[in-house]
Length: 407
Ligand SMILES: [Zn+2]
Image (tube, rainbow, N blue to C red; front, side, top):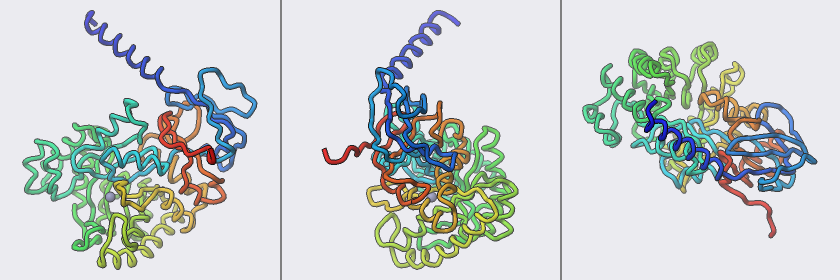
């Protein structure tokens, strides 16, 4: 290494040390702790947070070291930050709203121009508290429409994305630009009145091209699919997860169990179709939602009984109008037959496994990212408590603090 390179490296290390030193250390006291992986509450816990990570989990009575700001959690319940495995979050205001709902990690599922990669980088540098993002970049779909403007190299795809070369180009531009997962399409959309979600789009062969090309660079593929033929093709081609899966047959569910393919049902979005306001509205979508919800519920129950890995996704952009939430998705999981502990894992540890971040995220444990949410009651007894975030910490930064009340 020459002198200039060494000097640059030294400066870089110094800057890193300075920025870490600037981050506050916290002691969260009087905590009822749900750590994310044990089906119990650890009362009277104390959590020390240093440099964005969980430094120590102790008990009441442990001395708090100097240099730590103490937050009295008033015997409320602390859980790991929730994970949204299917989001279209693409701006900073929405990132803030996601955090305020207790979501500290997000896997995106297609945005218009790599805004998800930029948000990922801001969070990584500590310039915003989060959420941490696993970005999908631009959707690999036959008609890019406006997203063709996201990168100059996509110009040849303005007429369509169908041939092997076109599919490979879009996968590689995504990964070059920072995508950590590829999102593609097994079937048509549910959220448009003029498309039928049962209609298959890419064939098994086309999806295989996408999965193989992404795998060369160690990137997994998540696949939007409602209808069974498109879903089955996606599973056979090597999908990491099926998004929605509304019409999955028993055979395809069994195949998913065998292959370890995850299911992200995004049930809360189907409910949004049936309700006024939110992200989706209109008579056709309203009727479609009412038809699809019992269908999706049936698939959920079969998937759960078979032991398919099911993970929470809210499928929204966290706009000011959005009414779908990970907390509500988890509540639906419990209503449809999961135990509270299972639903909590779907939103934390299991979701972290799907995203490939299970070594740093999804647990309140020494060395993990300090991503935590304080809620008013015991989530192992009442899942509804997830809806009421009192304090949100993401990467060791306070993103929301409502307590103490009454002062
Ligand atoms: Zn989506």
